[in-house]
Image (cartoon, rainbow, N blue to C red):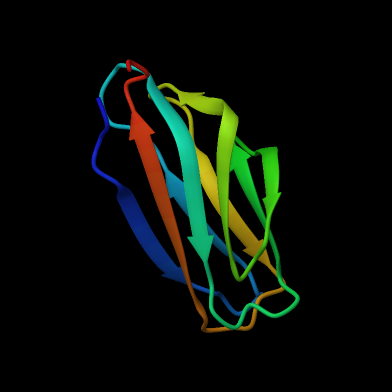
Length: 104
């Protein structure tokens, strides 16, 4: 079963960083087959997708999609985050998470 798309946004801080984090609610596990990010005007900023602080994949800072096999499986204690660095102060970044229960 597909869950509703989760989206959130944030503003780049004075140090040029922005982190948008996603954590599931409840006690089950969730499969995340796709995460998207967007930041218009990101220029040469760096961006990555991280699970519990560990690199999952680098992303294009201005806009990208992390998708495909293997998907990310998350439990209640896990945190999935899109992290930008070196971005222009004041820009807005967006993150969307597509998730399901893993059943066809």
